[in-house]
Image 1 (cartoon, helix red, strand yellow):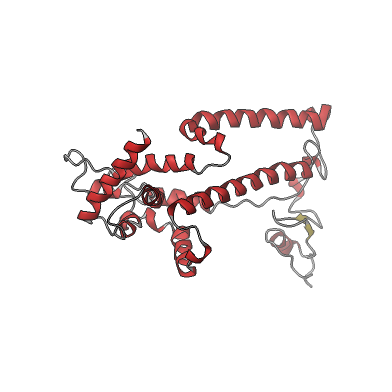
Image 2 (spheres, rainbow, N blue to C red):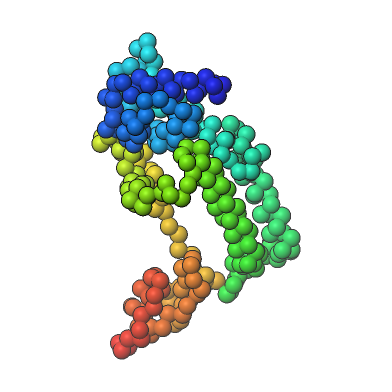
Length: 283
């Protein structure tokens, strides 16, 4: 849909919703909508990004298709959100990738695999085809500092791109001044984000994957958000529990030696981000 037509359709839907207000308890979109009697393009982009696409308002709407008003807020806002992703993307030439997301992800994945293979062969040479054992074997193919530099640079770019996109969106949706930030609102927004409050569909859950309310989508988002990985810098995993002085590590700190001589407690010492004091029990 052309942008002007999309903005006009979103404005029409919000005007109808503002008169009805049947869905005001569903999510943050409708209480925010009620603060306006007319909607600018910036207002509509802001409302579209408040929408989580849970679909509850569509299935509860008395004016949804086949009604002649044909109100479909989730569909219109999904299209408008995609437009905002393109509008606020940085750098600008990457904006068009949002329209060809599947193709872009596939090409980037293939290019990344090829780049990693070439880098591995270039750094490791013939040793890339030989089984490595012993301490530090994992990093003989790709050194630790190379991986840190590669993924650190990628993470830095992502952080900068998100920050620039946020500032652009903020300026378009509001006055863009520091004075407009209210600490209480930030606390409430952070809490709502962490508990995924607005994936609740007003209480019963999102109408996902079918028309019946379900908490499945909310659960999947929580599982994705809460995933954690602990990395052991250990060359020989087979002796991790039996070595007299195993090396333990978490992603945010260097390996440390477990100092407990008791075999029973040594196992737990190597499972947590701290070490036990030497125990008096004999091993």
